[in-house]
Length: 167
Image 1: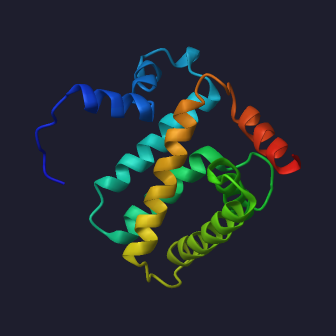
Image 2: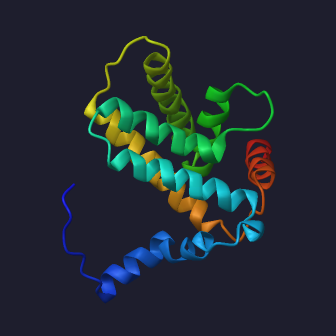
Image 3: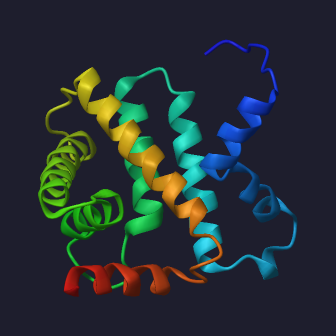
């Protein structure tokens, strides 16, 4: 959108703090040897999320948001990516079994739209699909930023996801 004034008030600062925004700054310092795998994944996810904001075509916004999610949740193994992404989102963002099932199903639907876009199929993206994907990607990013001190590698994140599956 257009550039606007951004008032930095106490309430704005508190809102930014609650999102974990101030934890991102140190990751941007020019010390790549000190940035771990998980932090690099967060930075890639932020890059793709922010790239979606500047897109004018709904298809590009949609793809950028999915790439943001993939930056955090694509496993290194040859696990089917759709299922891995859907389960990762469900386990991170869902707070009970029913909510996790709903999120997993929804992510599979959204990923199906992505596959259609990428492979020349359907290009029908509803504003509600985009809005929902933006919400999921944003909440996932906030969660990941808040975990920046907890995980040092992608593998630690995937180990945590596996533990959630088995608990």
